[in-house]
Image (cartoon, rainbow, N blue to C red):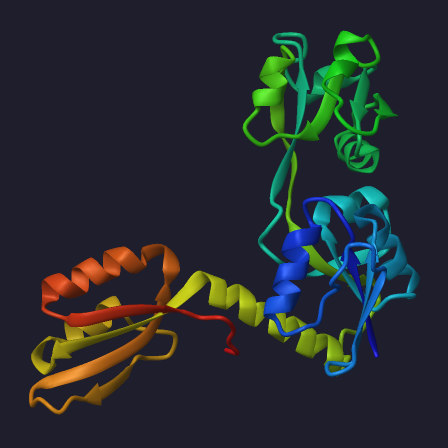
Length: 282
């Protein structure tokens, strides 16, 4: 039975369970459940602290896990990313009082507060900057005001929290992260159950970014219409009862679907419909 680690709480938990459910796997019904067995798919899910998942996976106790790339790197665990999942995206930046620190080199000999000391220490070491890294749990914005640190390193989304604390970012991003599927390093990756699991998740990811588009158009306009909706290999084209008309079906990117519909309408296509795709195999 495949043993998979899933975040039990935090920003990763809900989206991780959602994508697993969309992929056809049974998920826990109560947040207090620590283990859920899915006998139909021969999978056992273990709900763990997001920061611990990389450690369990690298130890070999669990086959694979869903966690954040940032948490994987911060843990220092001997595990690797095998599938990015596209949610829980974040950017890590340095910040300090305006003008106090201009670039990364200015951090030499100073103290940096962060909740991700593994990431920060690795980043500084790769650039030859010697600085003290202090671990703090939770919000680190007040570390500078209280004299604990000269700078902080934290997740930055809009920057509002930093500005409210009188801070500003400097230097290039430390890293960009997202949720991902991980496995222990050295794993040959040939386990058919793991490959099936990855195919299912990939199917959901593709389904989330495409819609199925159907429309009718006159045969003389077909080539121009197909140029707008080429599909993955090619669209399905069927003759209609009314002579000179055809029905077309193709997968199109969801992001540009409305524009494509407008262009098809201007071309003379009618009965243009889009349908959500719940899962697929490519």
